[in-house]
Amino acid sequence: MTDRYAVIGNPIAHSRSPAIHAAFARQTGQDIDYSRLLAPLDGFPATALTFFGEGGRGANVTVPFKEAAFRLATHATARATLAEAANTLSFSGGELLADNTDGPGLVRDLVHNLGAQLQRKRILLMGAGGAARGVLPALMAEDPLYLVVANRTASRAETLRDHFRPLGIIEASDYADLRGLKFDLVINATSASLAGEVPPLPPGLFAAGSLAYDMVYGAAPTPFMLAAREAGASRWIDGLGMLVEQAALSFALWRDVRPDTAPVLAALRTELTHTQA
Ligand code: NDP
Image (tube, rainbow, N blue to C red):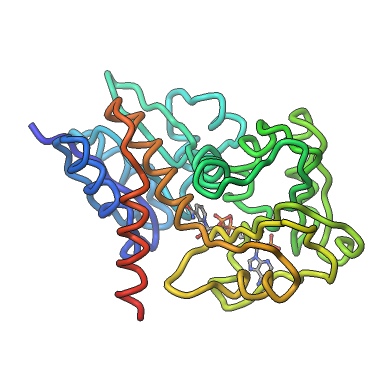
């Protein structure tokens, strides 16, 4: 019998997760059906519970329901508990397990796919929303020299700093106070790119050999990538690799087999370029 999975969000029509999981299933010989589920903004629990009640085995959860997914679960992995947000739900024996593969997915893309070294490096995480919260524990686990969270609304950066302080040296900042600081890795975890905007990148922000990483992805370089190039970053990349890597980790949790992400990422990159060219 075909096992059923879904990605739940609002909006959801744009999601590339069904294509990614279908490719993983073909590659590993797994018999799954993976669909998109639109949940009403005030109706995530009902949508998710109906899906699992009708036989769904697992779900990915995207904007804006990751915190709600964590709250709905009956138990959670340590990394989801730290983030207080889940992007992966597994249903088995009447229990709903919450996990968060966003952080490990990002780190896998940075370290394995892009060859970035995080240990003893200076990291700037721009943004303090759900995505920043989800990836912070995995970044700190790589033992950076320090991590600065900067956000338009500085109080939200301070909240993240206070929450994750036990994990290592974390500072909070607003954008103005970044002047004079230098980083080896600058991650854009804001949604500014979606509105064609970019958080300010003061001169001198990028150290020699630095990498600028935008969690947003697209057919063309994002506004953040273009601004980072202009501001002196050595390399710049979008978040398509993170999308594929977090999906692979969810797939491995559900199916107990780890797909090879490289061909799926390459195919998705080609498809993205062609559909939007
Ligand atoms: P949230 O809505 O939770 O947070 C949005 C963040 O962006 C806040 O920090 C907000 O600042 C900031 N922001 C919004 N607009 C601007 C702007 N014009 N200038 C500066 N800062 C701005 O969103 P998420 O954290 O869930 O997602 C952030 C992005 O990451 C999204 O674009 C999402 O698509 C992407 N993402 C990609 C993934 C991948 O696999 N590649 C996985 C997860 C997320 P403030 O607090 O001041 O409002």
